[in-house]
Image (tube, rainbow, N blue to C red):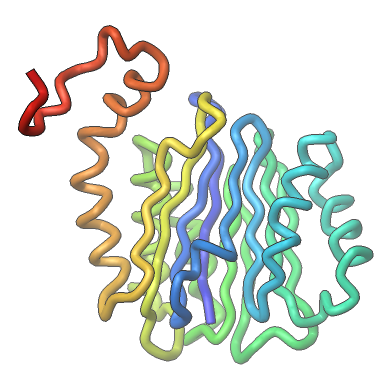
Length: 223
């Protein structure tokens, strides 16, 4: 019911992912990032507990392959899951259980992973990898372009209804946390939200770090 892409940027230390699904509110339970650590994706018949656990294990410097083994030991229903982990160094591991739904596939590339289930075709994850590896610029933009490439390659077999874009950098909180929880064209809507948020993103970081020098809020009553 989901396809997704995760990536890291060695130059900036940013980590993030983009995800979409026929299910409502997909980013709320399937996408997890942590500054200085990496990305965890848990989808198909989802167990959201595995996302924070994977990040904790990566934070303890476990290799992604060992993280995946630990997740399998933790969840007796792992055969229903599709999982992906990507650490800050660009090392990765993916897993699709025997009970993964429909046509499913995963792909791993340089500093990125992609995966999906109930796909139109098995080439969708590789299309996202190709897009990410051949793009440049802000990590969030590269991830969104990759998600769009997955959609263009066939995406999910049925209609998608939700999408999300999540990126963490130096602050402990995500610098990009954008969600479209229910929409007829969620990736298109997510593109609109990102286009409006991107010019304001740095200002919100400044307000957290240095409010005395933050730019005006530009709202009535702000003098």
